[in-house]
Image (cartoon, rainbow, N blue to C red; front, side, top):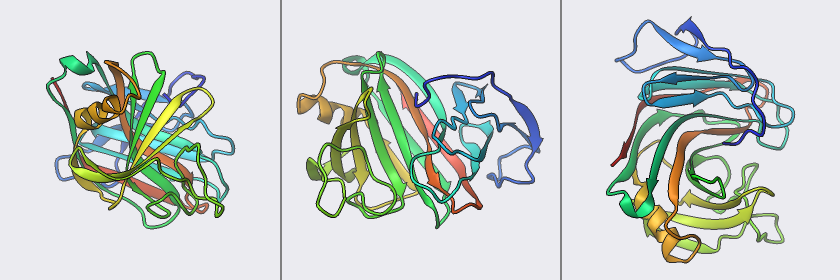
Length: 247
């Protein structure tokens, strides 16, 4: 998890007047606007997770894992403010998994500074694997949104340790670094998308193959949006389809 502390969650049921959901939605969803608010729908726990310095307001609402949204209003300053997400606990060793994949279909705003990404953890939280599907900035991490990296160019861009890696159904640039608490390896899709199926097990096996870790037990598999800025106006990310297959 991104948070280092938790406050008592506030979960409410609200009308969907401020969020656009798919045709399968009901008339009301469970929502939270609390800084560290959370609630559970089915097998998924939804976290508002406004953990960054200078965060303003954010609300996450869900009918189901396939039908949820994040509305965020963050100032035009640097630094990640929040990671609203849907979290699923896998709890299986990598070698015992026959399938670990995810399908998504969402709509994203055109402005601001953000990345829409999976955040996959081993069960001990030693290793963090981020899989960026869509994001602002350039494909090599330029602009206001950049992956964690040990290596930087003279222009201030993160330098990948591997480029154009084809695995898990797409092609990625791969970055390695530390956030001070965790080892982080980040896959940034070379072609950004809001609609894809990703073979997460294949990505984890590729990482294992380069000797980054061994037969880890996969813990939390999260998907959400790391928001740095919405230019001091509200922006909404809407998920119309999202699945995780773990077996």
